[in-house]
Image (cartoon, rainbow, N blue to C red):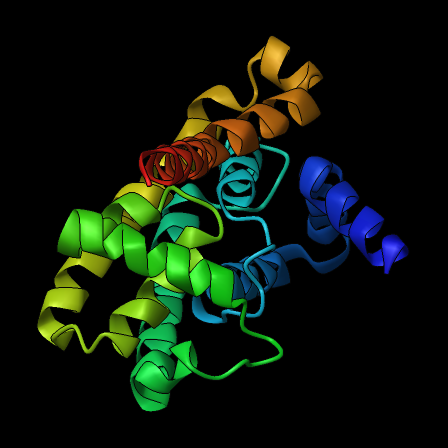
Length: 221
């Protein structure tokens, strides 16, 4: 188990080295690898640990290099499609399972993430789909919870497509324009770590607020 965790950490923090290997070994098949990772990270509640933001940034950075075959337009279009397809898969799985997911203990579905995401929806409404797109773990469970809560599909469709377009373009073009600057290129792991930390900040802040409110309620009682 520890070996798997260590490999996952290495994969996330050194995505540039790994992607370099993909491009060298698989050439244009790299597009398929990127598509599958974004699809799974978005579409399967059992894989929220896969890289999203950092993968997009790294893909954009490689697309800016003349020595590599990746094309930024193809990356953006393909990965918006992957994220949207993943959202829809998750949504309809949630709709199929229904509210019973809150009552049963599914081995591969983390109930604590479901509860947190549901609370997030209660606070932000439909636009939670757009906000959640920038929050690791929450973005994986957001479309699933939308399906469980029977959000109307056209409403889900609108927020999902807007969120995915903004998310993919922001990180992919961020990598394209800034990923090869000398400081960023020489400290790519630190930049990726920074992206992860910034992405997780809203989740951490929300957890801290919930703990503080719970303690305040207990004190008042």
